[in-house]
Amino acid sequence: MLNFIRYKRYFLKKQFRKVLLEKENNRVVSQKEIKTVAILTTDEISNWVNIKEEVEKLLNIRNAKIYSFRPHKKNQEVSYKHFSEIDFSWNGNISQPNFKNFIDEPFDLLIGYFSKKNWYLENAVLRSNATFKVGISKVNQRLYDIEIAEVPIKTDMFLSELKKYLKILKKIKN
Image (cartoon, rainbow, N blue to C red; front, side, top):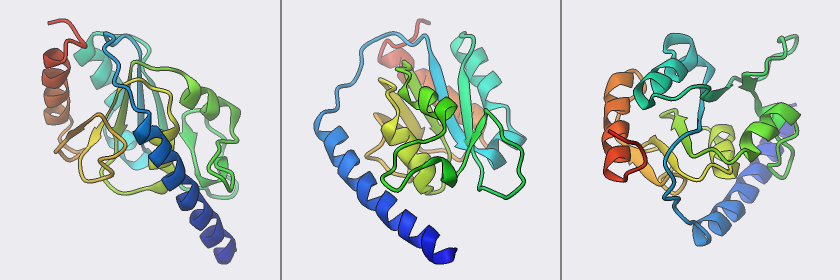
């Protein structure tokens, strides 16, 4: 089983690099005002902070959507708010229909709210059709249009910086 996971991760990384290069060469930053928001995070982070509620309050929007990564465990209840490594095929494509719809939706803003390297979260950010992507620095600077140097535990500081930059870029109104 361990070798299967290693091979899958190897192929996922290979495909990730290929798609990353394609997306970097074709990147166009949206000038649209933000009305729809998606958040990708870990189950661990979403258990101790309600980032969805905080983002909705800060940006004065409703219905932000969130998906959290949690490692797959047998007999774990299926959730429509979580994804795991089994939701990715060998070539990095997403096989779980609800998560695929989330990734395919052209959100105005995607927030990658995680600070540790995670191939599955990074792949989800990369494959997202969001038109503007923001994340925590030191994960993978090639994924985001803006990186904010903060740790996830300091949600208020991260969101304060996010709001400041979105105002400067005229992506939100005062």
